[in-house]
Image (cartoon, rainbow, N blue to C red; front, side, top):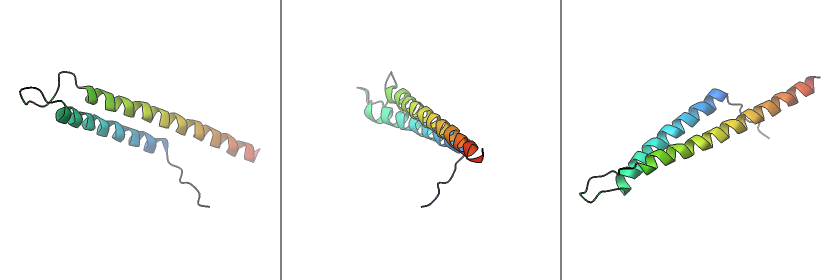
Length: 84
């Protein structure tokens, strides 16, 4: 069985920041495409998707980082017990 690559916390944080930025631009795109006013002007008074999509990405990123930290703590404790 192949061993998993250990990725650093910085890598996970970088992925999270990229996901949040991409979701922000996705929200802007969705708002401009789906919310077209009566006069044909794209956009909406309340940029719903521009706010919601990065919010979802932030929550998912926080959960991913929390899971990473917990796994890292568990692995470090296993390594310590192995050497004792």
